[in-house]
Length: 285
Image 1 (cartoon, rainbow, N blue to C red):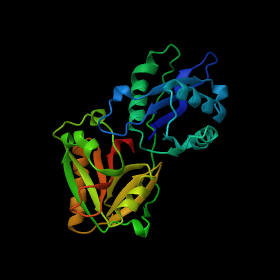
Image 2: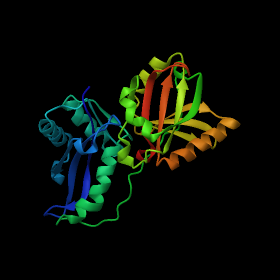
Image 3: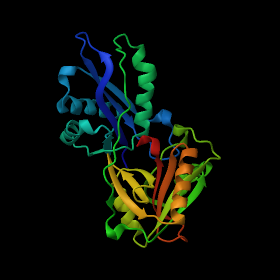
Image 4: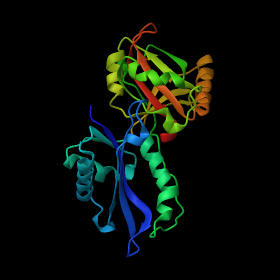
C-alpha cells in the first residue's frame, strides 16, 4: 500500500518584492500506524508566486514532490474546503485520488509550528492577525440501514497497549504514533466498539469515509455521531437513559486523553479479530 499525503496550498504571512502574498505548498506524509517515527515522515515545501496560483502550478509542484520522494502517494487529503476545486483538479490531472479531510494531524501540527517558529524568522514576514482554520460539520445523516451495528459498547485501552497494534488482526483501519499527541503510556484511551454480523462490509464502507472522530451530541437530541471527511456527520445511535451517561463519560475520557480515542468494528464480542479499527484524534476536527 502506498503512502497517504496531507497537503496545504495557501497564502502565508510572507510578502514578495511587490508586497503581494506568497503562497506555499506543504506536503506531509500521513502516519498510518502507531509504530511509525514522525521524524521519518516525508515532508516537502515549495513557494508559489501569487500570479501562478492555479491547478497547473500545483500539479507540477506535486510531481516535483513525488520525484523527491521517489514514489507516488496512494491518495492525497487536504483540509481547506475553499481550495477544493483547485486541489481536486490538480490531483485529477496527475492521476492521484484526493479527498477533503479533517484527518490531517501531522500537517496541522507542522503548520502550527511553522506559523510560530519559521515564518516570523523570515525577512519578508508580515505580521498579521491570524485566525484558526474553521472546521464545520454538516447536519448529521443516518447511516445506511445495512450498516447499522446491532450492539455497541464503550471501552478503554491503556495507551501502552497500542504499541503492539501491528500484531492485531485488523481488516481495515488507520492509526498514528501516540508520541505525536503527547499521551502518556498509562493514559486510558476511550473507544467505541460496534458489533455487527455485517462487520466486514461495514468496515469496508467506513474505510472510504476519512474517519475523523466519534462525538457525543447531547442536544437537541442525544446522539452518538461519526465525523468523517471535510464536514460529513453520521448518526451512529440515538441515546437514552444510562447510555447518555456512558456517552458523557466517554467525552470526559477523551478530554483526559488529549482528544485521542478510537472506533472498532467486530462481528461479535467474542471475536479476536477487528473488521475495522481507527485510532482518532479529535483536535484535528
